[in-house]
Image (cartoon, rainbow, N blue to C red; front, side):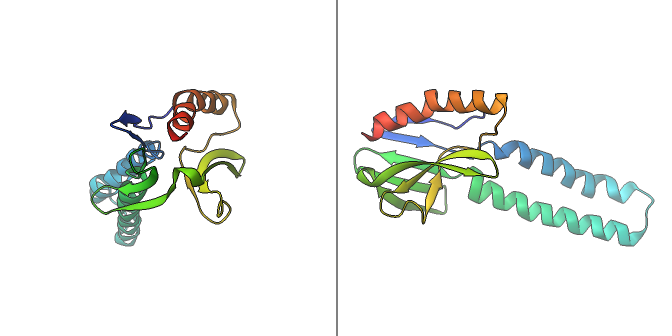
Length: 160
């Protein structure tokens, strides 16, 4: 099961649902290193080198985007204010909904289950993922069961 950076302290329950993106980011960083570190040493046409550099630059932008806006997203459940917040460190903190409005939605897209939270009144308009997608394999079912027992059940008890 991927890490979720679960923290429960001082009336706050925080989780980072997208930490599984780190493996993809590491893979892209290796590809970027190969493009910028190895390609200059190869004896290939200049046009092919330029294309590879452009691909690496695109991957750099994608990695920065994923690192800033996907991986570091933290969902905070605060008992003091009884609100749910979405925080991107260093950029902003957004109030999502009150505890009374929370509704757990099992979203299935592309054959993968993702747990999301949405407001009761607008649950089909905007929902916020609180887990990574779980595949329909034995490994995916094990990860889903572990997520439900270690994170989802304590979260539902915390919100009540």
